[in-house]
Length: 264
Length: 67
Image 1 (cartoon, rainbow over the protein chains, first blue to last red):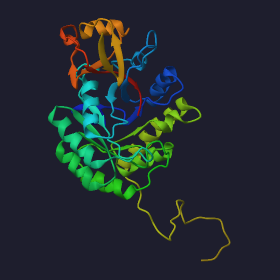
Image 2: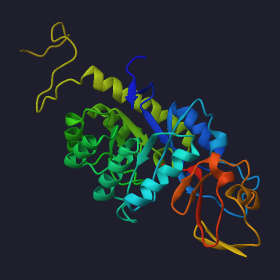
Image 3: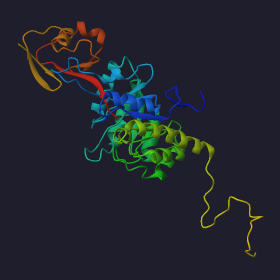
Image 4: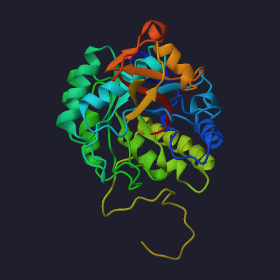
């Protein structure tokens, strides 16, 4: 596989990971995932709706099992204990599934991660054999500690979850990317295709997004835009951009042979 | 009467035996669910062997859309 993204020993061709929340219906979810070309999709774990569940469609029925690697998350958990319990349930639900997305939140308004609880949960989960992709603040020290604990991917926020504010601190992302020996993925904050491309140009190994696609006017079309943006950003990163020249231009066309009466 | 706390709700049942029987009572048969019983995960293979007692706490979860 050419230029594959390898996470916890498994290789993926797509570097775009997509969430399954906030779509109009399951069909639109499936169509957007298809258009995005993603191979890893996040799902949330929630209490079953008791009483009126008969015949109610389930998300998993719309996701072809062999096509996507499911990534159960701990969205909505505010303590290490709740996050660990949620992922133990996910492992049972998904037949001994080990790849998970850990996020432990610290504030219901800004959804910023609680890093102390995140680190605590990561330690427990790694010990229990989970492959932990971890949502983190863009603090390079926290990122390094999460890698030392044994997380298989570090996923710093670009800006707040669902904000669509784009990449607010490329400098911190770059610090994290440069020191990491595991994949670094931008998780949260992407608003449009250029944000995803910038993340990839910085050297991120992938981008995880949900709202940027689901809340677009045309989610399926935006999913395709994101696929192209992630590919373009990756290619640009590998190609290596030209150096920036400040305060001086260089012409692209030959200087000689211009028909002109201009002297010297 | 048996009282169970399921997903944070207190519910009363005339007669309840095993976890497997409760799955039928709650019309959850055939659904992809996972169950925690008094804080411990109960593997699917153990549903029929897990007896429920008055006051037990259960969490029953499914996968839903999310980022």
